[in-house]
Amino acid sequence: MPDLFDLVAIGTGVAANAVAERCRAAGWRVVIVDERAFGGTCALRGCEPKKTLWTVAEAADRAHRLTDMGLVGGDRVTIDWPSLMAFKRSFTDPVPERHARAYAKAGIEAIQGSARFVGPNAVEVAGRRLEARHILIASGAKPAAPPIQGAELLATSDDYLALERLPRRLVMLGGGYISFECAHIAARAGAEVTILHADDRPLAHFEQDLVRRLVEHSRRIGIGVELGCRAAAVERAGEGFVVAVEDGRRFEADLALHGLGRVPNLEALDLVSGNVAVEKGRLRLDRHLRSISNPAVFAAGDAAGQGPQLTPVASLDADVVARNLLEGCTHAPDYTGVTSVVFAIPPLASVGLTEEAARGQGLRFEVKQGDMAGYQSVRRTGEPAAAFKLLLEPEGGCVLGAHLLGPQAEEVINLFALAVRLRLPARDLARMLSAYPSGGSNISSMLG
Ligand SMILES: Cc1cc2nc3c(=O)[nH]c(=O)nc-3n(C[C@H](O)[C@H](O)[C@H](O)COP(=O)(O)OP(=O)(O)OC[C@H]3O[C@@H](n4cnc5c(N)ncnc54)[C@H](O)[C@@H]3O)c2cc1C
Ligand SMILES: NC(=O)c1ccc[n+]([C@@H]2O[C@H](COP(=O)([O-])OP(=O)(O)OC[C@H]3O[C@@H](n4cnc5c(N)ncnc54)[C@H](O)[C@@H]3O)[C@@H](O)[C@H]2O)c1
Image 1 (cartoon, rainbow, N blue to C red):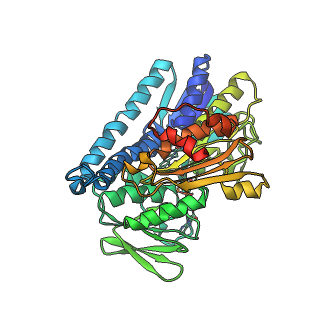
Image 2 (cartoon, rainbow, N blue to C red):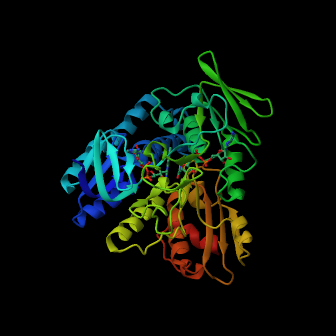
Image 3 (spheres, rainbow, N blue to C red):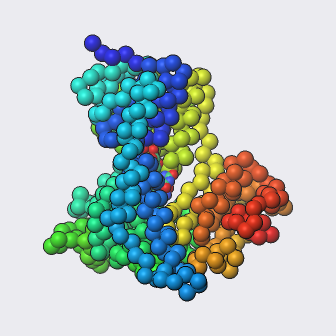
């Protein structure tokens, strides 16, 4: 006998959790399924554990920077990787049990196992056939399979965030979020790190003026950033690895990390049996995040692949899907003003359009930009790499884009995010009476 539900949610990350909880609160019979520990990428293998490592690495870096500025012994501060990992686990270890308790309390059935479609309204998990009015695909993303010989030898970000011992030499393949973040943490923990990036535009979706500063700063602190360096093969070499690049160069490493992009995690789902259309590895969805071929199926977050692969996007998609399920299928996500941060040290933060994108759209705008290393709030952190670039509609109009590099960029960007998303004029933002001195109080200088 099949089990009958109103909703089967595949995944227990940010996207699946939010939809499952909202539908359950409306009285639906809901089952949630995950093949890995409950909690998803952000809480267990992404944002949260990464930010814990980053926080300690940033503290160590700050101690070094402020040595001889009243701080004694800061230059002797080192990171003990095993205790850092134990600290990280104090955040991640309780997550699965906490989720299991929350599901039980809410009356959501939770099943551990890999889900696959066995019909348009049915999935099979752990030997059970679950039939449902609706099925949510929120199965997240996984590392892309690159055309690199020996790619199976690459460690993933999951492996990196679980390393019990930090290898001496790390080579990061790809110049995106994962490589820059993992490189900056590992370098502060004493590793020799090299990033190999295929073309001359690492972190391609960020404002390239600020990316160039981050690249220069990364090199200054000893991270090798090799541009125009497309990895072609990975081989074992003794206990370690050699990464061969298309131009013939070879880089030795104790760990070679996959930072080559992530793709929707759909393979195990047997989408053909569910009549769920896919094209080039991506779900074919309408603007309401519903499958174009199976109206019972919705998708959200990294699996949906409509917005950037970020936690706020997973939350936004989940809100849209929950509303479509509960109120009628009329809602669509608006990704305007999605904020994103590369947690390097210092962080690089961005919201809205880059200058290149604004030009591409033929918009009229003015640019305000500058170095912030001399700002009091930055100087007192000892951080030499700090800058901003704002794109504003002419005559005090709306903020089209804001790009920040420097201490507190990950917090200050949220004020710009509000302005971009709500289309607040820059002249109104300038009227904010921010606390002083604070990162936010720099905004009036930037707009000035
Ligand atoms: C290293 C790293 C750092 C990141 N840092 C940030 C950050 O700082 N800020 C930010 O905004 N974003 C960050 N991200 C991205 C962010 O984590 C994701 O965008 C977000 O977690 C996606 O949530 P989701 O609910 O769509 O999917 P996920 O949280 O990935 O959940 C999908 C779940 O589905 C399960 N699953 C997959 N297939 C099946 C199946 N067949 N059956 C059952 N279960 C299945 C998986 O096990 C997984 O638990 C980071 C990502 C990584 C990898
Ligand atoms: N702070 C955050 O929000 C955060 C952190 C980590 C991951 N993420 C999410 O996860 C996704 C995946 O991250 P990622 O860093 O793996 O991918 P990415 O898309 O950020 O960067 C991958 C880069 O690798 C380059 N590349 C591809 N093939 C190459 C080759 N053979 N040699 C050298 N370079 C090559 C690509 O040009 C690309 O720029 C991100 O897009 C992001 O959405 C977010």
